[in-house]
Image (cartoon, rainbow, N blue to C red; front, top):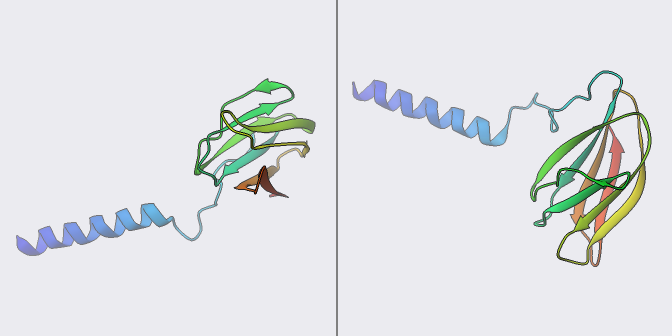
Length: 120
């Protein structure tokens, strides 16, 4: 009886640890764009809630220390990141490619957001 309880606790601990760290073959961003669209991934590594505007329309915010995917039609889009009650922001155009993920990795800069960008 004692052995089976210990075994259950060990298995639960291992599964819990695996869930927290992720498996090696898991993708960092487990989102794929719908067929015929592309995705913009905002990876918010800051401690700010970032308000996101795409083509002049406010969309779902990128919560702090998390990421969010926005599925878009291929082509150029204007994106603005805004710290609602602060001075930080970032504005740029993004070229969304069909069936690809464009990642914006957002960090705190000295006065604005520092955004590293790549296509995945």
